[in-house]
Length: 427
Image (cartoon, rainbow, N blue to C red; front, side, top):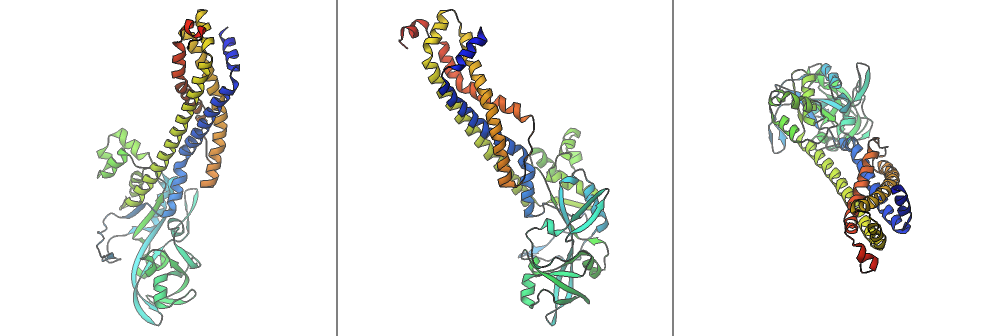
């Protein structure tokens, strides 16, 4: 009998049910799209943010502090200890190796250079441009072309095994050098392959393959520092606590340490890099890492607000439609009560009707939301988003909760209708 009542009740007031169903569908569609994007947005935004440069720097653990006055570094470039170039492939052997987008070593050398007919003191920096290597069964290529994507070259990029160099645009303008010219640095002839436009410091330097700098410095296999670009997650209280500790393994309990170590925080990845490279220290470039966390948090917060606003609007629309529908059916409710139906039976009828409406609207809204999320992925990230199967039951549960929340006040009012009053037409 009850299923028949529900069926007959659901067929009535189709216009109002259609309006309520559209409200549920739109709210669920927006919520589905936002949840789907937020669930898959972390790595994609992180990859977009990686275009702003490295977020971790690795240097020798016995290195001396930088001394800067007026923005000028007074520490001799050859001062301090060195890392071994041969140890760098171990970076791809860390726990979070797949989160390492790229890394680039640097070795600065101060030398006399013959430029535009006279000798002057310049800083030559050796690095990798697009250096290929193999670690285990994986082939990998890395260098400043990936870690420093803002570097612009007028000409061609040098080969890592050649003798061509990049000349900073400020140095080239001062000396009148052009692409194709030959310069002498430390008695070695080098060809200018391109003019580099980067930061104020790089624009005054000569950027060469790493082996050139090592030969000029007389230190084969030496590296001064390594910048690493890694995909990370925003730091929370646990990450801050570990970052402030001198030894996270001693400062944290075994459970917290395992959780921190197995999470892609910038501090945990830096910790593992220091473990992988002998006699090294690794630190996050704090301003970059913090800004990334702020951007991710704000974007996800904005998506949460949009989702809540859509669901709230849906609940209000359902509430208005149900209030009108129940008011129009007040005599029907009065008749049910006069025939012996209790408040629980009346509430069960309307909640069942609302639940069916929520399931239908939720299914349709889920399909629309998935299509909308795919379009957002193409428009913003130029990639497809991955959807978890668990999202479907979650969305249906949200649709039911929103519908019940919007209907509860009206259904509660229907439970208090007096049969005598409503059948007489006084309410």
